[in-house]
Length: 259
Image 1: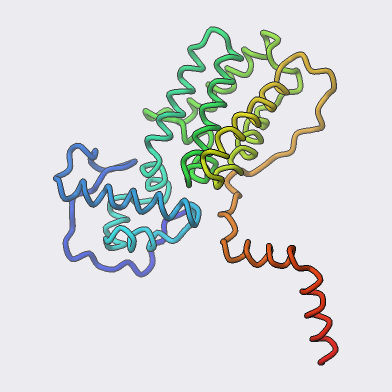
Image 2: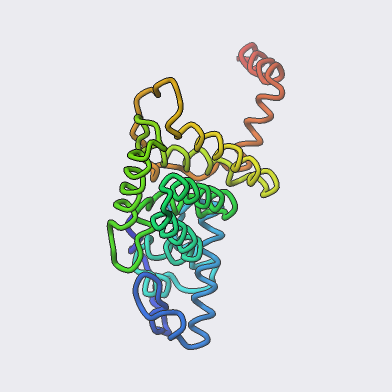
């Protein structure tokens, strides 16, 4: 999504860019600029976790205590800010992909990569939304814009040729796995981790080449189309409605009679 550019306040004290996708690396910045950058990234993670990666960037700036113009100068696009906020987690996943590509057993490498990403998705709040929007390009580092997609495609092909994947396995099934697992990201860790491991194990076993019955056709999905979680207020209202359906119906009936 393009960064919002309207109504930017004038920043009275311009500072050197605080690198992310662009600008100076964090290690080259002066101490106060590094502190500001850290505050912006911490605020971004908090806002993205609670409101989604399409949240107003003005809210990130407000929470970090900086001007909106300063935020845009440091992170020119929303994608720059998302990538910087979750850089450590993306690096973990990119490293897992490199290890998978180097594994002489393609299925072992593929399944290890999928498990690492899945567990990261459920333990780091907000990362699931940022990752889904950019997958697999989010894992492309060092100026290689198609490395992740080509690497995954090669890994899948090697596993299929080795008879380790079912013939009707489709790369879109990886997105389906991540989408399913990310639904656990708002559970407490003591619930999310064992549930994710169990779900991933179920799905990985179904990917293997010894299954008997064919799968239904694949369905194209837009992983970037995920929306932020329903607010607690909405959930609470729905829970009360489900818990007391007769009372709601009775109330509606009384209103109808009164009218």
